[in-house]
Image (cartoon, rainbow over all chains, first blue to last red; front, side, top):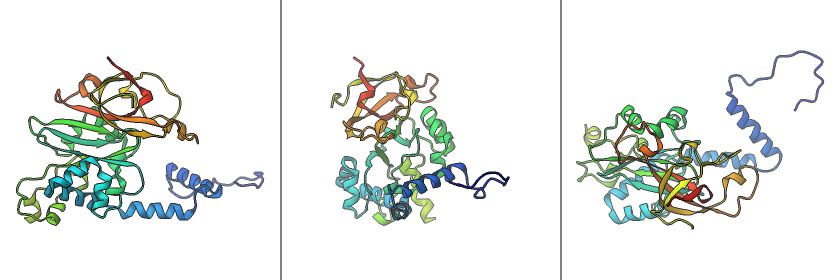
Amino acid sequence: MSDHDHDHDHAPITNGDEPPAAARARALEELLVEKGVISREDVRRNVDLLVSRSPADGARLIARAWVDPAFKRRLLEDARAAAIELGLDPGPAPVVVAVENTDRVHHMVVCTLCSCYPRGLLGPPPAWYKSLAYRSRAVSDPRGVLEEFGVELDENVALRVLDSTANIRYLVIPRRPDGTEAMSEEEIATLVTRDSMIGVAHPVRPAAVTA
Amino acid sequence: MRFDPGTRVRVADRPHEGHHRTPAYVKGKTGRVERVHAAFKSPEARAYGGDGLPQQPLYLVGFAQRDVWPEYRGRPGDRISLDIYEHWLEDAD
């Protein structure tokens, strides 16, 4: 806070083009550090942790589930334990629950209230995931959203939207593409995209990789 | 845990001042418990510096999309599932 007398005019002090939300976050951080609630080191460590994760981590889980049915069962029962089993660090809470796409049901994940996302396994969410348009339309018109993402569901596939409103983060296990039987676990992991683990895309088809 | 998987439940249709994690679009709607997660500290208290105790059981509750959105464009079997804390749920039968 400024403590000098305002008996003179000057332009408001601004930080260039910093968006209001960023300015607010920075102000909160300053206050929390000043009051000793968190340290700068805590902030830096957590940012580093978050950006060190990427969809490649989640893809390893999916690829293993595709080649190992027993691992898939463990992933569906306890995704956190399954991730640790593969040497991944899902981070501290929250709880991750994996859901499986089949020939009967397709899953799609949204967080209408904010931007809940399995960050410990996929890294930061894409910008569109946090947009008001996706967050509102993914629940009220999910088939329209899937069409815009270029996803067609088979005739008898029901769509199940998961709105992660609380402590649980959802990870979609997409269907394994046909024509991948001869591929290694490492090769099929490259077919698993971030969007396919959110449920707004199918995995890459192997022809598109080898072509 | 008050509700077993399969139980028909209604989401309380009550206003709530301040932070809560029950979206307006399911308030008053009837669905079915799909999964019992665990008990967690209540975000309604934690958002304001409270300890969030006692912990609230959290359920995954599924709704038919056509029950939630009258003009829903999709298949009859399409569902939407959300995590709802126990104190927002009522027995629907």
